[in-house]
Image 1 (cartoon, rainbow over the protein chains, first blue to last red):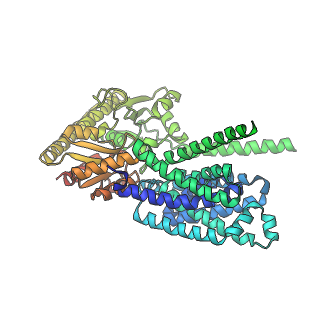
Image 2 (image 1 turned 45 degrees about the horizontal axis):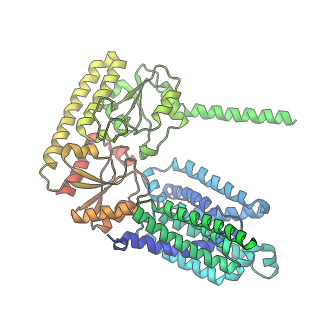
Image 3 (image 1 turned 120 degrees about the vertical axis):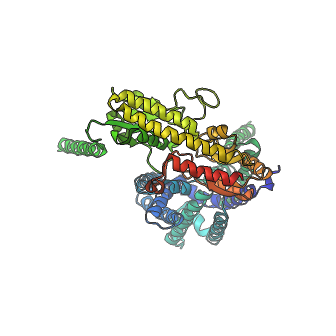
Length: 270
Length: 298
């Protein structure tokens, strides 16, 4: 049977492609801000949101998005307080998220429900989730294009960005919300593993060859698309788990790039 | 000054730990009754049907939790330290038992593997653990539990034997119902969330097509999903079964592709809170499973 005969595979390719377009855009800025682990931290914080949502009987997906936004602002706030150790803010929020989720889950009446909100797989995506992801992605892409210059400045050097008239605070806030919403929606749809790795691995690859900010963003999107699509193909034909396959394809590619670059550097020197 | 502060801090910390321990102790009443711990729901139900009000029973995996990925907490271990009997299914269902049992100091504890002496599907050791889903084998498990209770508490032997007699008749009746209702049905294939129904299928000539392997919760691989969709279409399967304690997303995706519907087939590994409140038990849930199967296979 051919791979595209199945609706769920077509859907995996569509959603995978959309996310491969937007997640590395966010990822490039995240990496420049030294916040590579933010995807993990936010997806853990969203667990607490799901639990709180179930307890207060509000929609858990909304709860997750809300918790993610709070956590992302928490990370921003701590990062500003301790600018030299910005990665610490992620560790703090991540452990707070896990801790809160652990405590709150004790009050959730129906744990079965809890599980079903945590679980996301790229090969099991519902109609609602697909449209939701598409909508959010459009929003992220538009904001990214409109704020392209401002985001670039802020990511590299907040101080000189402010001096050259960029409204750093507003830009940061918008970016924080976008990141939080993307992670909370995407992690629930395709799984936290894919989201948090797609934020960093393609960016790492493109930083090896990109010569400017613009190139780095474009290459990282290109890499993410290649990883996702080839990962899906491989997992289908080799009978592997899709999430892990996509991530490992990316890591393998990064390794190859580093080795090739080193070898090329050596030949040039000789 | 600094030293005094450290000491104060340590004292505070110690007192916190102590209160923590005190909260963890849910002391079973010292009324001379046998104190029994069971690993998950099916074991709990069987043991409480035999023991009735002659035992104090505590189920370790709480309602609404998937037992495959559960691990005991400190207070669970504390309960085991005070128990007389620990009943578990075995065959890898409770992967934590070996480690936990060897670390206990409780000398009087008898650990009872309810599945011992029952012939298994697929070899002896690493086989399919879900034997309680066959009424006939579940009866054997209950018998093992009865024997263990009688040996530990000979004073109530007759009581345990009476209960066993009563419920073994119920198991036989259930077995009869499954046989008579399922054997005339034309279809024999069921698609299930995880490979839990091997013994049930073997007993009644059915064939399970599991989406996942022996343990319940993990990401499926797309090739497997495609294969199951093709089989389901080809065999005109009407129902894709899922479990209440596992996310239904994958089952729903498959059902949609094969234009089937999703229904619950309960592996009795744990109850939800609603089921517990309604007073469901092994027999009522197995009958519910039977009616789901009838609908799917007719």
